[in-house]
Image 1 (cartoon, rainbow over the protein chains, first blue to last red):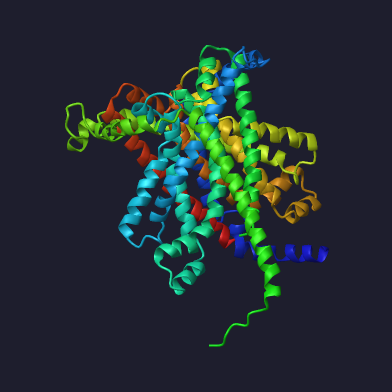
Image 2 (tube, each protein chain N blue to C red; image 1 turned 30 degrees about the vertical axis):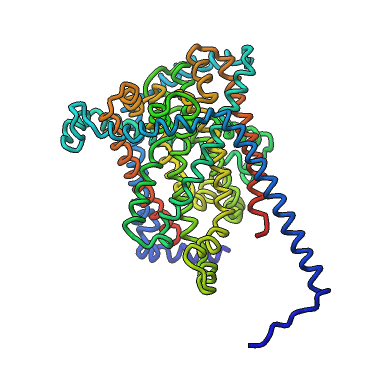
Amino acid sequence: MSGIRDQFIGRRAAMEARHGALLAGRSEGRVMTLALIGGALAVYVGGLVALDISPLRIWHGLGQLGGIVLLMFPPTSGGHFLLYLGALGQTLSIALLGTLLAAILALPFGFLAARNVMANRLLHLLTRRGLDTVRSIDTLIWALIWIDVVGLGPFAGLLALASSDFGALAKLTSEAVETADRRPIEGVLASGGGRLLAIRFGIVPQILPVYASQLLYFFESNTRSATIIGIVGAGGIGLHLYEQIRVLEWGQASFLILMVLVTVAAIDAVSQRLRAAIMGRPR
Amino acid sequence: MRALAVPPERQIAPLLDAYRRTLAERRRTTALFGALLLVAIGLSWVGAEVRPDVFWQKLGNFSSYFGRLTQLDTGARVWTDPVYWFWGLRRWSLQLLQTVLIAYVATTTGAVLGLVGGILASRNLTRSGPLRFFVRRVLEFNRTVPDIVFALLFVYAGFGLGPLPGVLAITLHTSGALGKLFAEVIENIESKPVEGVGATGGTWFAQIRFGVLPQVVSNLASYTLLRFEVNVRGAAVIGIVGAGGIGQELIVAIRNFYYSDVSAILLMLIVCVMLIDAGSEWLRHRLLALDGRR
């Protein structure tokens, strides 16, 4: 042990001469990293100043928030339990139908946006960009737009969920199609099948389980989204939550939040089971 | 060509039988699932008040809506007079900048909280079972409640209008979402470097700093960048409940039917989101390349 130590100490001058920058921690990568972290911190502090965020304001707000959290207990339905339960059902309905509608619409567009199916480069690119545009508009904004079209209510919410999911699902589908194994497709083509048959028997069986499990993920996430679109008037339990918060009925607000949490947890559990069943099923 | 050797009937029969039974069973399961799905759809159809007739009737509205979006109040098409179309460019740019800043500050703070939470929630770094359980539940709560609900609560309970409640809401949600991911990354690390640092007498912090962080930092950064993309979209809509950013301007324009403003703001928002997505994708690829070189 001490042999190595002595050796090192003995050669220290030579080592420092050769690797001085490394030993002093001044390698180029390190300088870059430090500069990056410094820049990020500067933007952060600048952001805090620009957004007018100060510890004092946070402290004041937290004080008031603490009082209100106390007012949230006990959570109470205020005699509207059935009404809230119905709204929760509506939320789930919106999530389910929105996901399915998006799924039906996304499948063909996913194929259009896949490079190995769509030979036409321009059409492929246009589809991709179009889907990106649809995807970058938030569900809530879609809800506002659809409310203008079909009026207030859950139907607008359903269409909003379907719109924003459509872009994301189609993109995922196109990626699944692009990474699909070529061999089954070539097999179908080699045995005399046409392009359509190659898609049906070469690609679809490969992406279907992936697609189904993605759909379940989207259903979970849509359950969450469907609870908030009510804030802009597109149906579901969000409307009641918004109302109760606005009239400062904290007990009922916390009751509604609890209902949402329980539902989301339940849906997650069910969908996890289903996903395991789908992925595990021998094909 | 040689003829295929066909085994005798009595050998084939049980095989065929087994095949048919397996197939029938699978079909039954599929049919059962299909039936359940149909029932669910039927119930939802009523629950969500689906009215296809209204949809077809109003579909014209949708296309004409896009027509109106591209029309100035002078009646001309928007692209004939871009200066008039983007009359609020300065104001909207500032609000867009505020939106991005909200997302940035919230993502950074949320990532730091998420790292602390992730370390406390991971089995290999935190010995205390009750502490782990508690931290996990807190993270779960933070990510299950949507950021806009937090924003709503904060606006009405204590913080008032402005970007502060928005930042806090997104921070909280981000800490939950990232904390879970971070915990998963941390639980999958190699334990040898950590033990090595511990064996040479390193403290708990030294173990984290030199044993854990070097293994996970590129992964954490990549998740954080992804979350930043999500948060920019989130920050763009929390303005709807009054929590800062461009959402406020957008909802005012939509509610008051200022169609050309809506399209101008949406266009700026889409371009901004796409630019940020592209930038973050580029950064993530750089990070992965860095990881591969090591």
